[in-house]
Image 1 (tube, rainbow, N blue to C red):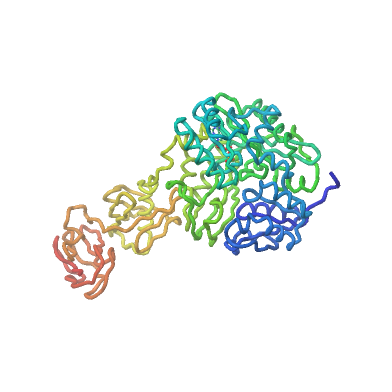
Image 2 (cartoon, rainbow, N blue to C red):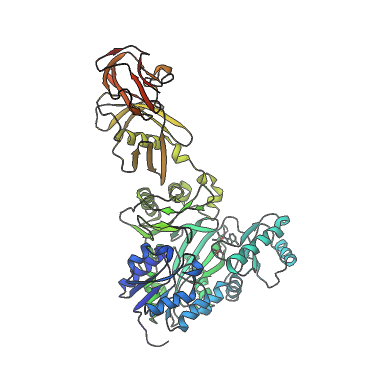
Length: 635
Ligand code: ADP
């Protein structure tokens, strides 16, 4: 290796949070960050972090972020001397790395040959095996005929996993529990692999039922020094894709960490790895561990390693790429505290993780010690269907696992996103779960805990209704005279709650009668919006909508209340009219205030039970009325 060649102008060939994160590290290192964008991203958040940026092309990734040609043009136009690929897109395509180097631009990543060797699961497993790294038992031979593969599967035994050799992101994977379905699963896996990677070769692996996903962060310089920065546990996954990651792992003893770390280093060396990379393992319940694959790039979950090791991995990538030696030694490496990351995705966890799109109308990040938010969006950002659904990552660091998880939970509770659906409610439920908190985390966590994926629990809870009622009482429509009974009726997804609320005299305190009878304190709630049609509440990570329902029976005494017969609104009790809010000919909306009457020393609101025009008003202020007397007629 020649003299170190410091990077001056860095093209960041990516978008979203990772582009922002790399740009920050570049600026701190005195490197000029240069951005790229597609037409869908012309106003994107990441561009605000770049000194200059170049347009790549139309929105589809194949014509923009996946176009080698366009990226090289952008690098030339912006006079970049180095390129960071981030993750995803072209980050693990060996021909791209080769083309970048051929253009005289430093590729901030591993050598193209190492990417090629590790990009193929079959090849990677063979190399690992040759270097005494244990691999999951299975078949990774060249005979790809259906008959042969089925015979091998029979030998391995069920459950067996069919995996695309070129795979990534959980695609091209099928678990077979009944060999009678092997052929069909094989066809499916091959079809998916061909469509996603242009390569339909598969391998077979024994399917471990409750393993943990444990991976090691590798750093290797061009001078032959290879170390690991400990493990990350990424077992909480949906559809074989990670959503929560932590460092370190509760499952590793120092002895096991040392053995797995050594195996990770051997795997990296087996392909002549240079730069930052990750060696992934499955750790079975019996303590045996198996090499899965190596990711030849920076990973989404790298921040948990940064927080417990006090390093900036992107900065280290720059140093390695420019030819510097690693200053860290393996013996210097030890984790401090605990870090947990959650991926905030624009997707509906209650509906098959369907990606969501839209404009972000609210983005209030949490601010607290020990929290880091790596975000690729802000208020006004468009979340399109073109790219990955990950919006941001919330990472918490604490002195121990419990403290880190508590910080994370509070951060998730405080984070407020509106305008696009996210997986925040699911993340919150996991973060609060006692089993998760105990550290009983395996890759089967979400499939074993189907209750996490059921919707509506938050929406229908008494707490949610009470928060919405509190907001409605604090809203502009509420009648504020002491002693007035204010009817509130809200319709959730599965039930309607009707109460009449009375101020007790103590500040913010209300006594409710009806479905949720009791005395409550309702502090002003910044997480709710009250409108004419109901209350929108940000609760447990979800935006819940409660519609105004026809008003309740004021005294809870049967049908004679404001719920009128025909168009007539009748007095629910004997009393005195205090105020008449409408006159003949007025048009009124459902729930609009008609009359305030006093009865039993308290004032009560009489509201319209439906919209219409006021046909007649039968009473005037000061009038005494009997129970059942017609007050107003609406037609
Ligand atoms: P990809 O490259 O598509 O992400 P990986 O090989 O990295 O695929 O595996 C992703 C996830 O799939 C793992 O973290 C694990 O949950 C699951 N998985 C992969 N191989 C096995 C196996 N042999 N047994 C059980 N689960 C597996």
